[in-house]
Amino acid sequence: MFIMKVSLAFNRDLIKPDDNCALAQPLLLASGPSTILGGQNAALLLAEPISPSRNTLFGPRGAVLAGKDGPLIACDTGHHRLMVWNKRPAIDNAPCDFVIGQTTATKEGRNGKGDAQAHTLNVPTGLATDGTVLAVADAWNHRVLIWNQLPTEENQPADIVLGQKGFCDVFANRGGEVGPDTLNWSYGVAILNGNLVVADTGNRRVLIWNGIPKQNGAPADLVLGQKNLSTRDENAGLDAGSLGMRWPHSVVTTGGKLLVSDAGNNRIMVWDDWPTGSGVACDYVLGQKDSVSLEHNRANYLPTAQALNMPYGMAVIDDILVIADTANSRLVAMASKKIGADAPATMLSGQPDFHSKGDNRWQMPVRDSLCWPYWISGCDQTLIIADSGNNRILLWELEK
Image 1 (tube, rainbow, N blue to C red):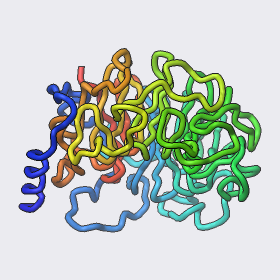
Image 2: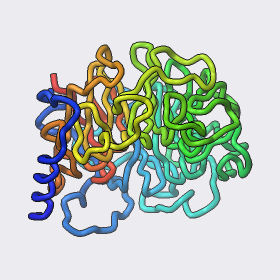
Image 3: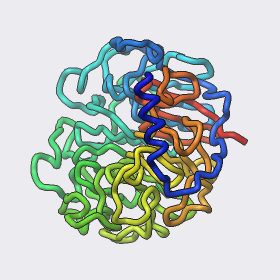
């Protein structure tokens, strides 16, 4: 611990941040989350195996509230399953009502240790709902699963699969070349303005379907991050710029803008208007001074109000853009109306100030700390956080 403190002091003396680091406004209630699910082992000094049950989570990378009162659905990523609470949990570590992906709540393993089916999962990550439809990014099966109605039963099978011809297929890009109907490590999914949007991470692109697909293997209508639907090059095969991506993960919309978290390039790409064709370059970025810069924290050790380090998740809640600045173990935010080229964050949670970083603030986990938050979503005044490094889901209200 002494070495860590010396190192931090050394870096603070050397690094000259590129913003004035105005005092951060609190994003979330200072009292901490209203409810914490999982995380029973978070305070242990030594690693301990996390056995699957109805109230344990292992590296969760997604969670949504389908309505103010529930249900709550979470990707228990490390246990390769979805956990569903029929009503919004009101107490810490409340057990889920049922799971999808395993035959029982005490089982684990990729695809239930068998072949892929309509109810099995292999590293489920992002998920999205419009209150009726549920879409899940089943990343390592290289597919997206869609339930036409929110699932209500244990191991309920999905209705539609995208990225594969059928529910038993699991190969990246269907075992061949990339195309409009293939996926490769699809980590993120969103339902925006009635359209399905998928972060096809391994293919370095974002796919958009006009509406919600009704047939297995339906092709996407347009692509961002690549010049066309048949290429998959990092940064579109070019030097870093406003067209290509490296590691897209989540997609949101606010005020007519479309935003993509390009985690591998440590930035958020912003289109001021919803793209209507493939290969449209973004208008500007957040997290970097320009679209050709790539370094995490702008090549500094410590972050600033304008810098990002592997931002994976995003959410829009109460007209506020919230970014999960994952590798800095913090959440940063700004009013949607303030989004602009290189705009600084004005709100913060998880760290004491914009120049601080570190898993759980370099301490043991506490109620209001974060460790690699991968995914966030919003519902009413509640932010739902997949606090992956702490093996827990947080339900945390906005500061008002």
